[in-house]
Length: 190
Image (cartoon, rainbow, N blue to C red; front, side):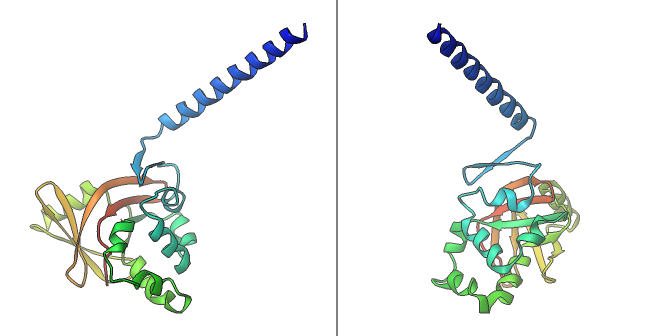
């Protein structure tokens, strides 16, 4: 009898796990996610809540924390974030990131990071339309206050910074609850 009771309890527990797993999968399937850095990015989460899960954006997340921008990028927004990957940060001269995240360089780091943010929610389609309307380029003001220039080549969307460096959008339209992220392959400099 004791063995039968244990088997019934194990069976009931197994069924509840199956239903819980199925319910969680069903909830997740309702959201159209994009995988970035090996992790699904959920449109119901904000920019910071998603970015912390991307293994390709650990440097960016550390920089956002060092600059004290977590609360801002977790707020209502909307924001369009051009998110450089770890590989993009690796292209910078050796020691640049380590220098920028020091407390005494917070102002410069904040300036660089906010140069990667546009106020508003700009999908890749909207940026493409602005480029087309602008006869091959679209100039947009960043939260930092300076401009970025978007342009296209073939099927690719690019952004040029104030120094003339170009970054390619490698993953577009990663929707967030407070905006959108476009992953880029180069750090932009004001």
